[in-house]
Amino acid sequence: MHSMGGGTGSGLGTYILQALHDAYSEIFRFSTVVFPEDDVVTGPYNSLLALKQLRDHSDCVLPIDNGALLELVNMIESSVNKKGTVKRDVT
View (tube, rainbow, N blue to C red):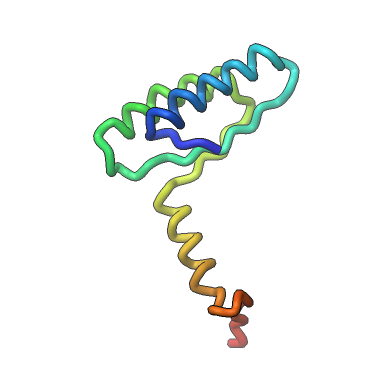
């Protein structure tokens, strides 16, 4: 899993993906990538450049929106009480 908006995630992550493709071309590569919210000016630009590398060197891409991932984590955290057990909805 790597970020698509940051320089390290979009640059280094796709470089490693390309190196794995070159070294192990017969192995399937599944990439889970997190797309950024528009909090940084270069985020969409980095994402666009990294998409070509993903298309060329990955067999399957599972895109995740950063905002949706944050909402999911908050929902899970709110369903766990202070003792670490999951609250059960009995309605």
